[in-house]
Length: 345
View 1: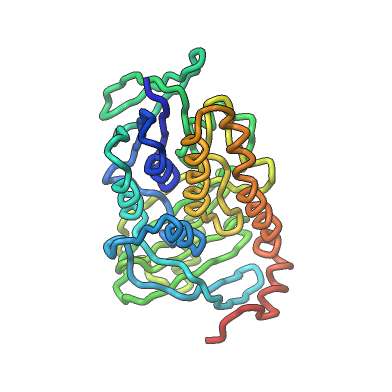
View 2 (view 1 turned 120 degrees about the horizontal axis):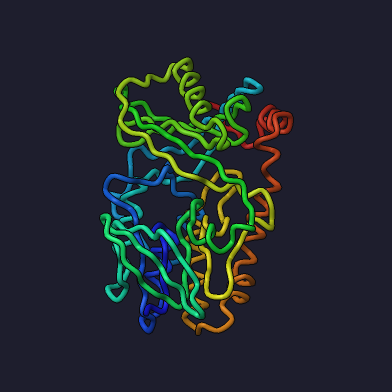
């Protein structure tokens, strides 16, 4: 019997596991393998950098990726406008970043690698977890279950499926960058998606991707690839494709923190920016808050966690209010035409 079971060891789960008191018996379920990675541009935002600074964590150089880019080329295909804006992201290898965070977890945490949680049931005051590792199934029990398993969270689907939130499909492909050119672009085109697409240079590769509505997501991505080719970016040597679900938080009530022994962290809780789809900072911040609450005792966690994350939810609301200026064609045209905060090159 474990005190706490953490499902998922991305930035949210790894941070929580690192911060929990040694007095608890904790199991952490990590399904990541050497062949799988998060469908993510791998850009560390200023907010995420600030959280790492609060933790006094410095990134090893092998986590960083080339090149470090200081501006984003914003391409509005709906209005045929291009602008450059300064950005302060750190270009990194997302898989190496997550492995680094996992390496900081203390030895008292039992980590189950290459393991998937396939079922969770409540039995009285405890929870039964059915786990699968290399085809072998086993049962574990815990008093508290914490979902840090992203937009396709089995914890949220099992216990909070009534808390609806829009789910998109993020798809990206890697291609060899023979020219060694460097760029980062953000692309808007309503014919492709009502979210946005991206291109990023990373370690001698191009990454092209986007977030698409679930219906016809593959067709939309192929249309985006065709426009990329027509725009002059060579997609010659294919390297790999990555995909995952991503939450599009469009309302204050979309965030679900959990109760009664089942709690959600980061994107599983709906804590992801609807404007940029950045979720690392919210993952680590929510983990820090929940760890602080649990370490003071296991009573009334749900209410304390809900109130403790109020600032996060208010911040997400500000991002929701920003969305029309990004995704509404007329408002976006007005902002970009004004040249506000744009860089002249």
